[in-house]
Length: 337
Image (cartoon, rainbow, N blue to C red; front, side):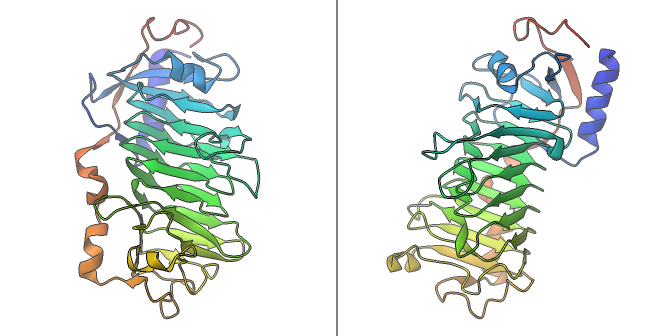
């Protein structure tokens, strides 16, 4: 393919969706990204996603856009802490699938681990196919300023380890059965679909805020909650667990009590579990546990913006230009186009 035409195609794909590239410290250019291509058929710069990530220089200072052609990528992937400013993008989540089958500790089992700041994931399915009954993380995010757009994150227990840092999830689909969004990040989920596979009282969230001094929590704005049978909104992994659902549709899969104290009544006075202007058969608050909150407009206001994640300071539009990688990044860049 002619490289000018290729850039045009990539730019049109990026521009066709209202996604934002997230970066913090200023890279070399805010409008131009280095383009790297992953194609299992051998027509790109790399055949494996991890190989492309490994080719990014340590302490990288430029935006890197790794475009992944459709396919089933059976890889256990890590974005190392010394490789910031990477965007990993498919063109459609249902056709660009990263999959692995593993269990064990929550930091050992992830199919995909993000340890670098300023990471963006777009149009990807990230899944752990181990199955029910054990910890099996699909995505671990242990870095600041990470964003995911129109991704599908699939497993059963501990699907999304939303560990540390400030994160933004937009129009994503997250599925699991037990504590399937867990961790102590400060995260905003906007227009996401959460689907519970629980057949009993599995919790959707297990937020781990451990002191009132921590400015962390999970905020769900304009989301959709569905389930196979029945589920709780959350339970407190940390004593000061904080979760707020606002303007969110809740199906009848959500149990009337809504929340659980994880067998520790002392957490009832420290956890902050709120609901604001949610709707649907599972959103009725009259039978919620008495220690959860039906927020007033004033109480909800701090959670209805990107302030919790400081988003206004690090959310920025996608680059508008792309350039080929130098030979110092890719020895294959002069291959097939």
